[in-house]
Length: 286
Image (tube, rainbow, N blue to C red; front, side, top):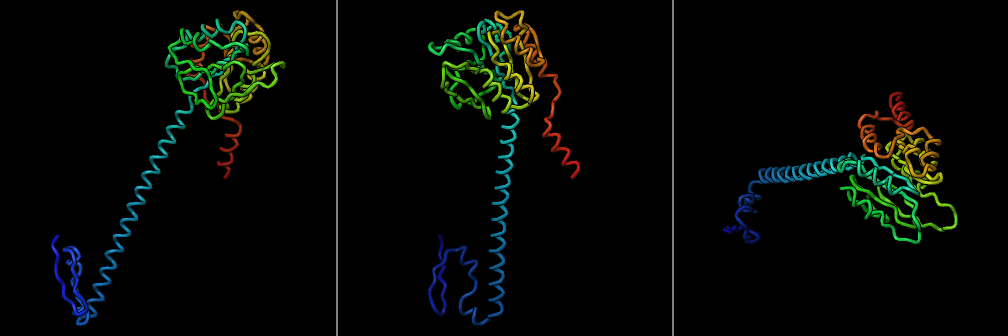
């Protein structure tokens, strides 16, 4: 870098070339022309002020772009989070019904399925492996804090109950194994609370009445309920009690439920909750 030698009354200063261009006035010049020197200082101050403003505007623009990008990502996540989550409850004779159901369900259906079956707590469940043989969808055994994704199946592990919150599954330990356990009701209720009108519950073959309270909770949130016709189920208890508890949106043989569910989701009108209607009414009045 070239350096220029400036001589003044008070000192000798070595300055790089760019600074020399700006430093046009020496101490001698200041003494001889004080008015011009003051004008020069004002111009210099204005110049650096403009630079600071430009820098600030540039930073604000970058922050605005980052904010817009963040909003776009959040919006995409919100849109993607609207995929249907389907709870399927079954008990005795449930494996046969599940195989028939998933054999007729297309791979890229855009739904996540959570299977709640009554299992013997003293045995390791082979349900994930058995279902994986007959479906191209990925099958997992549910674990704690597991995020569900579309086109996948999640199976409850033995000796556990399942709940869902914000699309994540949570395991619940069974405290008293001597008492009657209702894991289908537990999951369906949490599904209704989490997904509201987008909750979907399906009752297949099984003995007893587990799931009846769960389908009520789903219908109260304006969700969708499907029930296998009792006369086609190996065990009619659960389908019969569910159909008696609520009016199912779809009541059909298990092999027809997948196609009817997809068709129903494609044509069902969007239903607004009472709370949403109240909020819109308030906005109109205001």
